[in-house]
Image 1 (tube, helix red, strand yellow):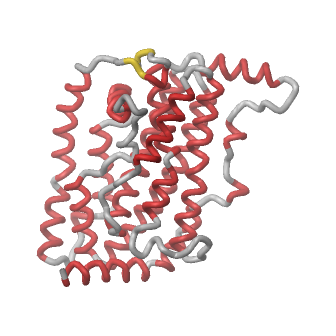
Image 2 (image 1 turned 180 degrees about the vertical axis):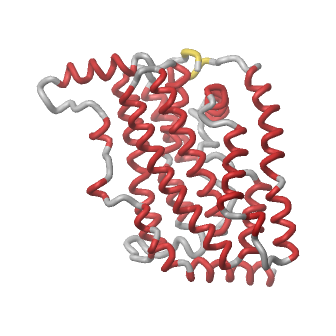
Image 3 (image 1 turned 30 degrees about the vertical axis):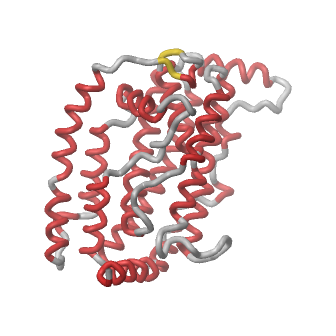
Length: 334
């Protein structure tokens, strides 16, 4: 117990020591006056010719397949559960707990991050509503369930594990939105392609910040950081939409299956994300480690190959799964 307390105190002290570094990374948040807003990416209903603008928009969105729409709905609902994610960040030791309007660098980062992320669910939800192709009440019920059911990334209040989790998730989300943009392009929907690319650019900036935060942790407490990284890999980085349902169906399982089938985000992508982080954080080259740190280093470096082998088996399983009715699509096949 004493060892655990000492470890927790060290982590909190490291996070506190990083405040100046975090302040230097706040430039990775875009000034609000320079941010895109949903209104910039969607047809305007304000001018007198709004009907023509909406008809042109619906003509383009009409070419988007039901499978892509179902994947987009799942991505949007995941983005809409933002209150759960901010609450979790505010519980991480040293990162949260600064008060509602604190000017602490960590508080400025988490509020700025939340404000930028808020636009993502908004723009996708309005797109889906205007398309007229999805059951928005079913979508809204699922969103309410997801927020009500909560979010547990299995990090407890550990700030090191929290930064590993966000590094993985931001890169994963950037990949998913980029791949969705490519599918939108193949469906000849420039509006959807543009908004997915804009979201992916935001996620890439956020990814860079979280990767730099954890890189600093590795500099200040390398063995503790490696242990946290390994712990997250053992527990697996759970997806934030894992409690997605509508009271009748496990919609997260269906969403994952669709994303795997469309190659929006796959087990192979997850393996590549871990491989990228090991390279970015220079895990194989870290020195001055404890015996536990060296063991974590060795285990982490072996992970990507193991995940890639698992991806091959997963792809074979996915290919055998049938399409099933999706409540978001008025029970059309998703």
